[in-house]
Image (cartoon, rainbow, N blue to C red):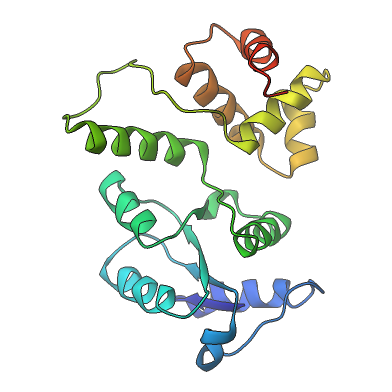
Length: 204
């Protein structure tokens, strides 16, 4: 894998951590075509990041993990259209969380923060339906993603938010956002209703 950042300090810190992971093999930028994953770190999604992203995704068989402070909904659609399905918020990144994201991308899977996933679903739904902004509170017909299922499975086992966050190596805020996304999307009353729904529908 390769690491790219406009800020050299960010790059140095990430490289220092990833070199400690035996399953990670870092290569130089000029060997990008042989890397399975490229990690791109930035503050916001701007023209410079788009240029870097376009260059990286042209490399054969390379999957990109994007680490950002913020991104607009319209920019998110652009990112996903480039084939990027793994995005992390910089404020939520830990060394272990970063390692998991890289391995997820390497396997060809996706990992989006719950708030971005909701924005993406809403945006794609409006585009496919040829509609304007979605009506607030309107349901979106989409199944549960693996991360949501895992959270509800642990909740069904009796774990609280803090215990689930510790087990999955997420922040408590992320776990709460996941639960909020599920209850809102499926129009469920509370967490207990969410667990019952997941059991009834065969997710857990």
